Length: 327
Image (cartoon, rainbow, N blue to C red; front, top):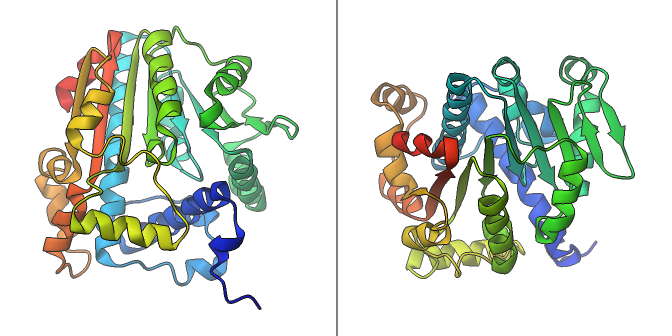
């Protein structure tokens, strides 16, 4: 048996894809402790791993904060298009095994919002395989779904949910495939990138964001990424990731909250904040009190340090610009 770490035998893309397994495990841990409800979280974690899913309180709380931010953005978007009486669409980039569409499918359908997910073809195949192994869930979520193995595309019969294999570094090809699946650039669109863009080479991120700004007249972009690579905590964070074979091409290009704001400056309105600010402003006090009772939490200093090293960015234009009033 080889004594080398598994990542030494994996391609850089394989290593990045593996981060979704860690995210799925962290999500299940937070659910098991009671931070949130997600009946689909266990589907994407193997039964052997699920028994040992419990993560440290610091990770559970951080996972909750991240999910809260994106759930809140989706809820605000649904409320906006409902108020405006227009259909909308969500584009989730690097979605992995995220369960957000599953958890919000009824609200999305009621608001006439379609949902598109894009990730590596291998990740899309893995997600579909996990769903198929749970036949009852598959029948509930994807009755009559079509699957194109050659194109690595799956879609519900009504077209309200589409899984699409694609590489964000080859954005024009992704756009072509999105269009073929019914993506409509004229509709208000929420674009979500949850710990994704930092893994992508900066020129490709620039191409992607410029396309959104130019081609989606009513759009909101919500992203969440690592920042502050050069202090002691940031250096330790990067070292630990490097030990796992994980590199963050984008962190030095946009290393601060202000740099993230500048990256999105083409949009009509922009708000960026670290996760300490998000927690203070946007997680209600009663929710903080509920969470405080879930498990012993002594890592206050580490929690504040960690919060300084993640940035939530929200940019919007057109009919979705008013979303920034609530950020």
